[in-house]
Length: 450
Ligand SMILES: [Zn+2]
Image (cartoon, rainbow, N blue to C red):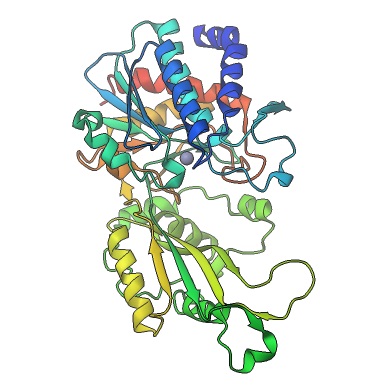
């Protein structure tokens, strides 16, 4: 059955798609100040075109926080989004350029198409569509679009503090959103925190001939030995105190997650693996993805890694580690525990450099926002929605929702093979239109949902 919203989307699909490609062509990678500024400006102009009152907040030379507000009603929905993207490298793995925004077989390929430009744009387009089809927006919508999300939202708290009313609201629509391979919408109601660290070791003033490996200290071995003390073969983090602040799920919470559909076979197929890491059976993998913190080696660097051979003793070694944290772990406290762990195991010579980190946040499931999003998603995608208490990833919801313990939810269109943070990131247009429909429905339902 075709309705007025279908007709509107059909009439505007070329324009909406052109806008998406336009935004995706801006290479707003972390650290590229010029491109980040261009993306912020693009967002501000698009918000203005959608009848938003638009403001911009900045701290010394960092990417802007773009704020847009529109609509009126007794509830305020805070849309927390970002215009920065992960680096597109390695470029040779992309079938078309990451900033070409090529359209092939009903999909748009671009770095950021899924995370988070497609999602941020469709939420703005949905506000426009709502007005065109239904009239006045029955809620207040506040877009908070930052440019440092992929880099840990380092200044978001400071930016939000410039106007404390920015976080006054009733609920938050997070970045992103996904459906599983069976087409069921996955609504994420929280996210893990993150602590990102580098461990560095220098064993001597310069590299040496490996004939001296009997007596000259090898930085790579030293670092590998330090790493070996941090996680056991079952994935349990061995840092003393690491789990002390973890809020254990209640039996009801555990039951809820165990009963969620989990596409273990789809995951194994996508990654071409026989089984999950740490020997985790499927049921445990699902629960861990929601409730377990992690210690992940993101990159290792030492010695000679080029083609052929070079017999050398590396004098330097470096590893990057991300810890995904769960409530109520604090990144600052975990950093101190990592330092203490290294010291206790005799690795005082391993340097620890830590970024500030983001706190984890899990919002309420029993909330009008979650009920409205669930109904909207099920209506648009025609499948039962899954309420997932936490994403495995991080978004800065603690900064936005922590003060008032707001519920938060994702509602979007990513699919299991979308390739966020990886080469050939893409979105399927069929899902894009459905996600706009779902978002239009959310704006309407949330106004009166009990
Ligand atoms: Zn993101």
